Amino acid sequence: MQSAEGTGRFATCDGERGEALRLFGTPLRQNIAGARRARQAAPEKFYPAYVDLWPTDSEGTFVAAMARAITESMSSSVEKALETAKKLFGSLSPSVTVNEEGKPTLAFGLAKHARIDPVLEEVLETPAKIAAKGGPRVAVVLDEFQQVLEYGSDRVERKLRSVIQTHRQVSYVFLGSRKHLIQKMVLDGNRPLYRAGGHYPLGPIAEKHWQPFIRSRFADAEKRIDEQEIHDLCEMTQGHPFYTQHLCHVLWELCERKAKVTAEMMRTAAKVLLDRETYAYTALWESLTIPRKCFLKGLAAEAAGVKVFGGEFVSRYGLSSASNAQRAVEALLGKDIIDRDNVSFLITDRFFRLWIQSAQLS
Image 1: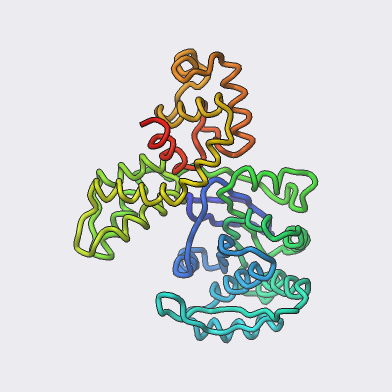
Image 2 (image 1 turned 180 degrees about the vertical axis):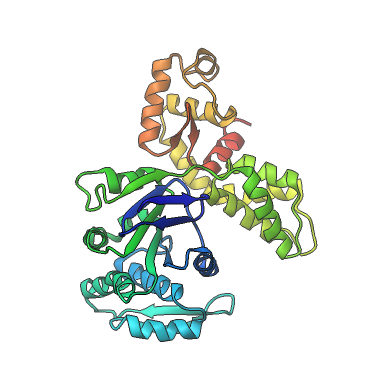
């Protein structure tokens, strides 16, 4: 892989042989339609297979998600996808079902007592088989890759490591929004994917990119959201795609067709999201020591880039000394509660930041 270019939501890969690229910090969060748009936007020499691992919780659901993504990357319709799936995956049972929106979608069945190893082997070897036929190369994008840690074993990681080393016509992109988990998977010498490829942290998406994107999505449904509301939304989420899209989704539900998003709707949407997480946030808060709480209050209250070891911050938020602030930083970084932001820090969960502002600072 000689280059990787991205806007924070899509990366393209190039090179004479397949390699692995690890991106972390923001989730891609595309749907099936997004995967098809990616196929249309990608160079013709690639079949980009986008795999959303967020809903998966086992090797079985991983296999189904992978098979569906590979099939859809090569197909222009559900009917064509079903035909392709039957040719590619002999150990799975593909079918067409109707989703909650009433649209046909491809599904893969796995026998209850089926041995997962040969099925996993077949699915992971399929991209190389496709590329070996002389057609476009294959680029496999595994989004929210840290989900494989929830499967109960490292079988998927071990198998991926072995195929990455032999697939010369396939490129792999691993995306994850949980930075410390992704780093654990690829920088820990005891993990199967240790240094399996280059890694690149992705920052938040700038407001100038969110403005036209959000406005157009609301306009497509005959709903209106003005520049000021989008600005306020981005201020609340600090441009992080995961939290920005969650907040937009609630706003979308609150705003009626032909109506305009208002400041009151923004407050309501934020309250809806915080109410959902109140129990978890309260439990987390109560588990923290007083210096760590003081530090988080300061981060939540101050503007980005605040000098957290400076005398003014230390004094204002009752940290007593810069060494106390340093110890709080080390502990909070270890728990993935905060992250580095150039010369300062930010609260990783943007809604937790809003909860602190609402419940602890008001």
